[in-house]
Length: 160
Image 1 (cartoon, helix red, strand yellow):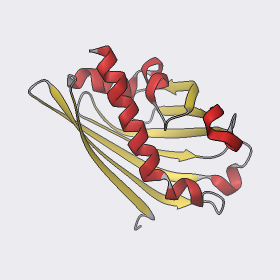
Image 2: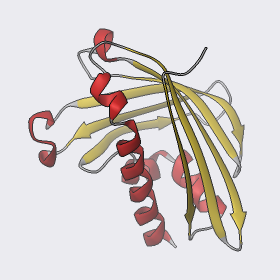
Image 3: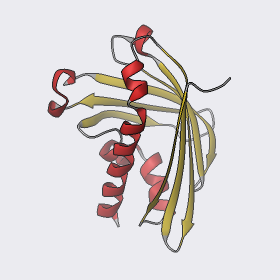
Image 4: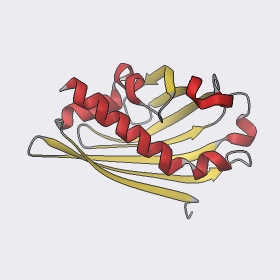
């Protein structure tokens, strides 16, 4: 099946690969940086094994205006886990209370490699299906991931 939308990111972080891996796989760390600006993560559960689940809830903050307090859950299943190297999961995300019309089916693949103490991140996210009321979220995917990866960089800079 041809993806509906695909975004690709290549970033280098001034942090060791094991720290970047932990930032993606430790629920307490994920809560500190996940999602675009102006969201918090009130809930995050990660069962880090192939077939295990990743469950994250994003909640809109004050700066998101009319969306304040809106929650966007995401539930996924890990398909590939190669510690400190590769992580892949299939996921569905939606707007709480509007799952039938806002659900987005997405595959995310993360590849990490270390070079001179820095970590190169290659991320590919593809949307394969989405509900009729999820158009804005699909269109904003590039923007949201850009902010999320910037937040990850800020988080890693504080952890070094």
